[in-house]
Amino acid sequence: MSGLRAELRLRRDGFALDVALDVPDGEVLAVLGPNGSGKSTLLDCLAGLLRPADASIYIAGRSVAGLPPPERRVGVLRQDPLLFPHLSVLDNVAFGPRSRGSDRATAREVARRWLTEIGVAEFADRRPSRLSGGQAQRVALARALATDPTLLLLDEPLAALDVDAAPAMRAALRTVLRQRRAGRVAVVVTHDPLDAISLADHVLVLAAGRVVEQGPTREVLASPRTGFTARIAGLNLVVGEATADGLRVDGHALTGVLAEDAVPGDPAVAVFPPRAVSVFLSDDEPHGSPRNTAPATIAALEPHGAVVRLRTRDDRPGWTSGIAADLTPAAVADLALDVGSQVLLSVKAATVDVHPALRRSPAP
Image (tube, rainbow, N blue to C red; front, side):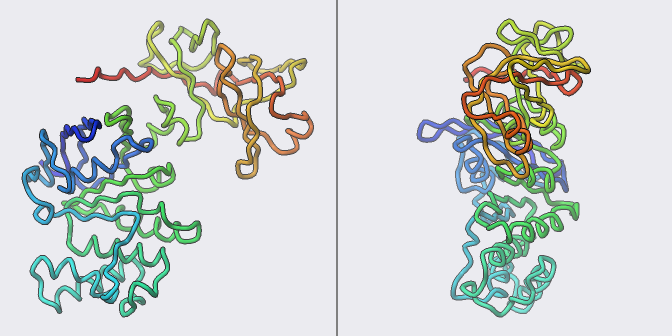
């Protein structure tokens, strides 16, 4: 057995974590979830900083649940690089190999190799105080890798970086993680779907300490089953009951394309992107291919890149409650839209995908 396999159950300060995960050798798992869902707690359990009463953790086929952190061969990178201020960049990275018994020359050789790999070799003689935030975070990544970990844990590694530094760090992570190194797996905690798509093979979504979605990254983000995942994927999600030709919500029909595993009469979700939603004034009538059309009230108009994102109120029965639509600024002006405006939303049936809803396991 290789890779990472773990089953964890932890009760702490009123919070319960109950997670099972399996990451194949050489692959990357992204862990997503709202604040307080247990993401960092999960990483602390894997690193050995928290000791669950009930845990089974195998890293590269070795049981580590009873081992202290230094014996687990785990590398950790968090938002704060936590570099030693009194050491040079080179000696910061060499610290790991030195702590594992390497002599000074060997440790520095390893450090130089990783600094070159991450693209920060030119800063080897600097102190951390002379580094930018992005440079310091890349050095911290090199330090985590210099110990040759079998499990690399990355806890929001880009969250504290500005928009100019984050792309370079993401590129460094992508280079390292895509090497498919045998004998190493990585777990990345992030709130950014771009990180999940560009770095991870698989996604696991946590909510209140439990796994609510998991699978290949693109599949999970393309067909979300929970509101949180739909929001980070930038999709609308409507919850209802599957029908032969779509979804029924509060007695109203939403026509769509039924997934093969969706069963009429069972709980289901429909997902579609904001760009698929057309907006008309209440007295207009959309024409063309088969569409879902229903009234809505505008709750917000927000800048969203090159478009304006319209959001509807949650005060109407049916599928238009809480829906997002992307419009050009010119369209918003032409329609004279504002908060409180009454509109018709229209979505082509072909753009609506209907999937079985998740069935959560009852709490123990």
